[in-house]
Image 1 (cartoon, helix red, strand yellow):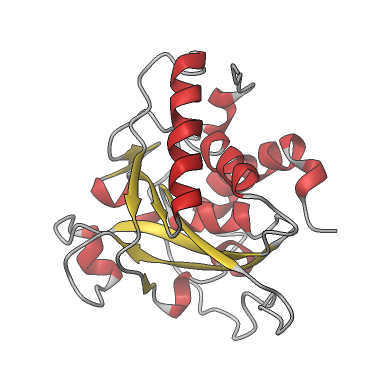
Image 2 (cartoon, rainbow, N blue to C red):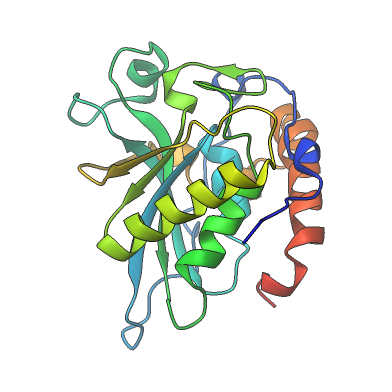
Length: 216
């Protein structure tokens, strides 16, 4: 099966670095869409560059219960944002998704993952540069691993990008939630320059492509 992604270039927004923006104290009611007792959820962890962008995208999907921004894949325990930005902790900025597999499948999550960032640029998304911005999937189950590898292989064969896909597919080992001011960032800081000029255009394009998958 050949997968053709339309409008890939529209998602590659060259904006300001998320590591340099002014931050607003979050609302304690962030990530209101919490897990209910009757939902059998699963977890997957994605890195697509700045976690503010990743969070803003996946929060909108029907079936995604909770999105938590944080750090994965490194060797430093409980790293701070400043430490990660120094580029020597080994961590990637990621979002850990809790989702209801009866409402959204791994395949659908992977489709959104690959269509909302550039998986061909090593350690870079737009003007955000460094190993913490690498493209990576941290799988939590064998099913996630197999589907991620299959999807990557099919995309590589399809020629959807001119350059090779370098997305890493790695077993989940650790996750450290980011500081509170990073959580629910776009919803709390929509008028900040990075949110307005980088995240908002990206979201508008995402919403057009995945309009049938959005929360009502």
